[in-house]
Amino acid sequence: MNRREPLRVAVIGTGRMGADHVRRIDRVVSGARVTAVVDTDAERAKAVAAGVDGCAAYTDPAAAMAAADVDAVLVASPGPAHEAALLAAFAHDLPVLCEKPLTPDAASALRVMEAEQALGHRRVQVGFMRRYDTEYVRLKALLESGQLGRPLMLHNRHRNVASPPFFTSAMLISDSVAHEVDATRWLLGHEISAVTVLRPTPSSGAPDGLRDPQFVVLETDGGALSDVEIFVNCGFGYQVQAEVVCERGTARIGDGHALVTHMAGRWGGTITQDWTDRFAQAYDDEIQAWVDTTRRGGVTGPSTWDGYAAAAVCEAGVRALEEGGRVEVALVEKPALYR
Ligand code: ISE
Image 1 (cartoon, rainbow, N blue to C red):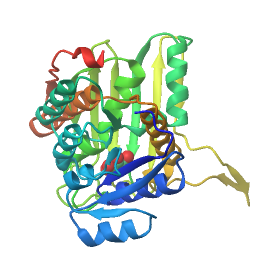
Image 2: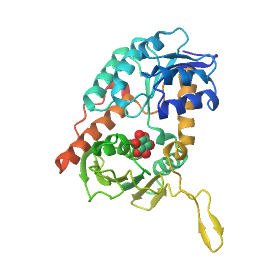
Image 3: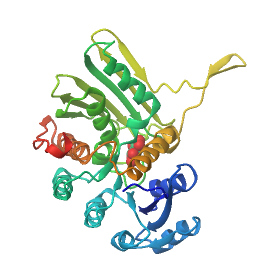
Image 4: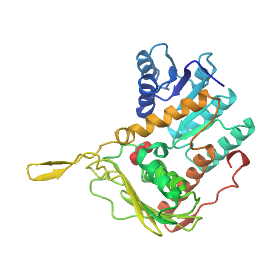
């Protein structure tokens, strides 16, 4: 594809992220427009479509993908619906941006990876948006410059104000720590080889029965350790912090010091409350990169392999949470398409 005209995008799923991406493509990103939205809830799809010029509402992803005015697909439906949407997109050979997780488990991610290989070319960019966040990008560049020496440990903190009602203890790993799994692989350039999950007494602020917080230790095949404090009912704000400890120094991001005020005998700032705000720039740049590269006929960003590797690590993490102990991660050999 080499499109001079704007890319015509079908957005599958009009929940929180889907609706935000519709707004982003409609008003922020250049070179694309939303021509179709899909949701199993027909009324919700119609309501979102009504806000966008020339946009049709569908309840069936395959019907939207068969439409003559759709060139590319953004999948933002719940994770268990991703496999079917991705396979339908491959049937039409359409480029896809697929929100994380690629799929909820390693077996379904493998099926998607096999189907993409059968096409013979990459079609998928996985929505690990932290790879586009200015602070993460600077950290990665610093590590690659070699100035700090070899990375030994990565300490991550990931805190949400409150978890939604449907959140389970396993989702702290598969939905939230999934980001640190990808960030660790990307920043260090290592695969994760084993996972251990420690479970302190849950916070009294967490819903009954939810194991929150958790402390996750990721071991990498390059001999580094990455630990993650995940706390999804911290109550006070949205915080994502990372500190890398290398042989010759350390580097840290996510302190949120963009604006510091001094007033009336106190100093301080505000804490972001939510990821669509904290990572707004990352989401904008991620979707812009997808649109630009797709219009040139290319593929960029995290691949189906990255989505599969994250799914396999999260699956091991959920086992470690449920059974205790250290669980090793077994990845298939990396296919040539992703090397
Ligand atoms: C959510 O799905 C996200 O992707 C957010 O970035 C993360 O902070 C949150 O914990 C997840 O539930």
